[in-house]
Image (cartoon, rainbow, N blue to C red; front, side, top):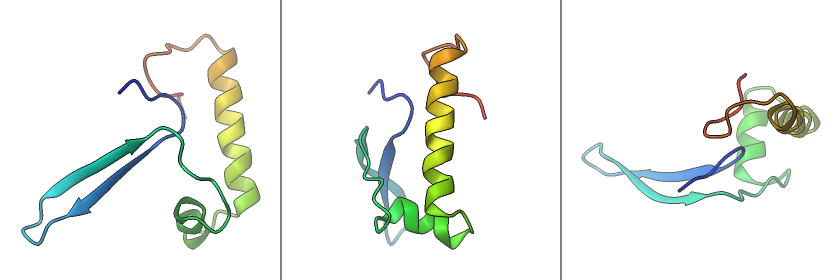
Length: 74
């Protein structure tokens, strides 16, 4: 799939407990009212801090000569 950086994998759990991948989305919504931001808010990460961290990771990943085949280091 070659997704790098920010992405989303949608999964569902069957009644038998199996994980089923629905889709890989390389462009997930980052709106404040959407699931990703709401999940972050539930664990105490403010929306502004969430967006700032995403931007910091993207800038670091693009400027540090990291291996582009994998995600940025934390």
